[in-house]
Length: 285
Image (cartoon, rainbow, N blue to C red):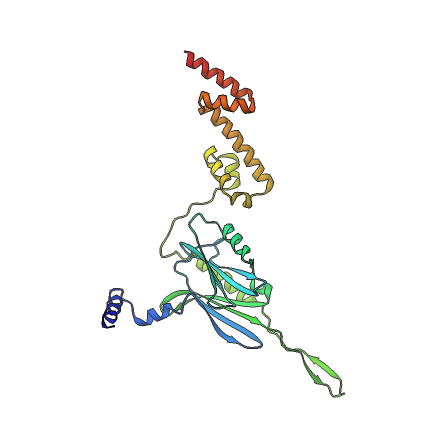
């Protein structure tokens, strides 16, 4: 026991870390219940924002909803993984390992299989507030969410004795002020540089693959199972036609006599036949 205490003290000293900051680690990256009663459920979370990476269109967080579980969740991307934190069910989360090449569409597809689809809190009757906060020494993204519940309708008698319906007033959950604040937060997050920077390459556009890419590049692109999901039917068809044409040109230019003969037996292409004759004449010389 004494050895464990000494070891802990040594680790704290070497890392210049206080006990307070260690305890704070247990309070970040998790959702906590602020208030919960018959009228409202109020949750708050502090997520470390130092290592957050953009998910889509420079946004560093997106909301997802599971209709079956009635669960609102927030998706965050880190250097090596994506994590979906449940906002209505504290402690529940889904973590997916990822690399720089893992696209948002692949993650969204995986989440859809689990019942989660992209949403906005207002669409499910919830209000959110997001702000940049320093929490116990950590740079964090503070997320608050409130879900208002409809209460039973109360009745009261008028002076004439007739019953009148007096519905409880439900607060306006669509706060323009909060939406403006969230836009400002996203702009601020986009300007922040991650503590550990991992360079990413830009994704070439469809026009590049349709006009400029080499056969090898286009073939790799079409071999990716995600490609078909991101292109329209006509775009995919046109790229398939172009890769076939580039393959033919490559074979005519660089193919051996044996490769050309094998291909000609299948397609009877006159261009292959002419190229075969050329190579045979060159071989005779």
